[in-house]
Structure formats: structure tokens, C-alpha cells
Image (cartoon, rainbow, N blue to C red; front, side, top):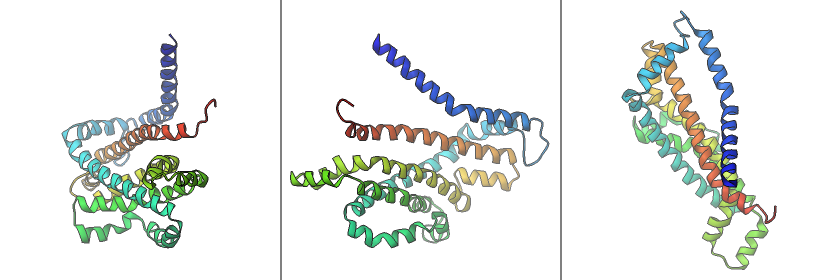
Length: 267
């Protein structure tokens, strides 16, 4: 009975959290629906018309043909940026002289937006997957790298000294102590980089692509298909929201070990 009660309580808390999160978007959409109903404007069409275009153009094979390439490129670029950022950030965080030496270079490179390198990417890679993935890696790398450096440097030095005194191998110190302790900061960097990666992939598809969400939105605008244009932006927002929900689930799983490490017995 206690387990059943705990399960019901947990379900109730989750439903309450979902209700708190969704009430404002639902209210805004309801206001949008009534405010735009019967609109005769060419550029600000009714929400019912936009939802119809969303159903026809984005909830079928045509939508999948645009969404799947974007998601594939986004996943490849984001995962590569995550691996490179965590590895380099851990190295720069552990070896302080090296981190201090390359800090001016890092600050210079991260101040250059990834979208600003689109012309160079087109010259080097042309219109293709390599260009989009490389821009995502460059643009989303820096929040992961810098947060990893900060997280690694915040690890208790006494704890590391004790591990060294017991001759614990370096790779075990990093995998079992340093990275779990730095996990909260790393996850902050990853969440920031995810939004940057979405922005870059859409922009790169608008300028140099023949497929993808950004390409579909731009083509709708060029052809004066205004409902389809708004539907594409609405689909992009929904995809970004779902990706954020998925990331939060992964974040909770990753941080469980961090919470366990910082919870004292009897607390």
C-alpha cells in the first residue's frame, strides 16, 4: 500500500508540474485563436489556417522530408561538440597553466558567432551536410567547453589530493570523481549549446541548403505561402520544446549520481 500511495503521489506531482508548465502556452494559443479568427490580413492569417497548413505540410511525409535531415545534422553536430567540449574542457580545467595560456585564443574564437562563418563554410564544404555540422560544432562548442573548465576547477582539491595519495589512476579520478562533480556545470553548458545549435542549423539551411526546416520556411516566404511559413515556425518551436523536454530527462538521469555523491548519510 505504501508503494501504491508513493506512486500516486509521484504521478500527482508530475501532473501538477505539467499543468503549471502548460497553462500559459494554452492561454496564449487560445488568445491567438480568438484574436486572429476571421483575419483578412495577408501576413497575419488566422491560427486555424496555420494549424491546417501545419497538419497538411508538417505531419506527413513532406514534413518528415524536411525535419529528419535537420534533426540528423543537429544530432551529429551537437554530439560532436559535446565530446570535444567535455574532453578539451577537462584537460584545460585540470592543467591550469595550459588553460591560462589558451584562454585568450578561446575568448577570441568564441566571440565570433558560428553563423558568421557561413560564407567560409560554403567555400570549404559547399552546400552539404559537412558545412552544417561543422558550423554547429563551432557555434555550440564554447558553452560546453567553458562550463566544463569551470566545473572541473571547482572540484574539491583536497579530494583529488587524497586520491593521488592512494595512487588512484588518473583516468579513474577523472571518470569517477572529476566529471561527476562537474556534471551540473557541464549540463548547463550542454543546454545552452542545444539552443545555439538549433539556431545555427535553421540559419544554415536558409542560406545554403536544399532541404531542412529552415529551407522549407524560406521557400514558403519566397512563394508567398504565408500560412505554410507560419506553420514552419510553429513546427520549429514545437520541435525545440520537445528537444528541451528530452534533454531535461537526460539531465535528471545524469545528475542522480552527483546528488548521491553530495548527500551525506542520515541527511
